[in-house]
Amino acid sequence: MDIEKFTDDVYTVAEKLTQNKTPEMKSRINFVRERLIELYQKNLVKINHSVLEIICASNLIAQGYSIDIEKHLSDILVCDVFATKGDGTFIMEIETGFTPPDHALDTIDYYVARIASKIARYSQFCSKFALATPVVGILPIPKLFLKPPSKRTKDDIQKIKELCDRFYKNPPIEVNDILNARLHSVYLINIDKCFAKQLDPYTYLEIIGKLQEASELDL
Image (cartoon, rainbow, N blue to C red):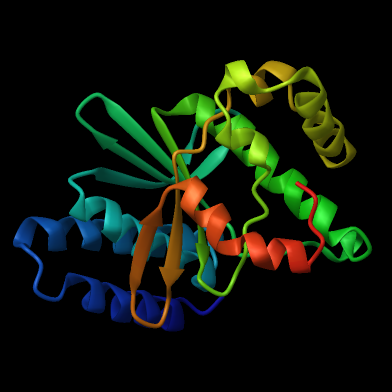
């Protein structure tokens, strides 16, 4: 653990994000900065993920949200970014595409299951749920989550459940969680320039559609 290096890096990003911002916005972004340093001292966050979190948090702060980081939602769930505005709640989970060595031979299936399980588990705890990823990554979002619950067939739901059950059994993803899960937006993070761009899921999947076809991803 290198607290001095972590602090320097987070301060550098925070300084970029607070340029030309109002005093209130600076205060909120710096709160996130200090929260990340506190979590790092407890060995709960890493620098690469923390940079993504503060960039995304800054974007939501600009939209008028109050932010918390690494918030516990239940005994087993901790979300990356938890935001509130009025009576609304917003949860954002950041994905970098990392898969454990144990899944070197089923990387695609594992990552699709990971994305599906996050949408199913986390979206029930908020008014709006979003996934975020660096611009160099691709999120394999199952198309089922773009349909309203009334349009999701039993076969489609079962297909997602069986995939999730291969990797997530304690606890398993429930059918109703898949049926009612919602994905409101996708954020693309430009780390070098310190900003995140929001897209609706339909536009995002349209953009990556050709890449998915080229990779023979059947979602």
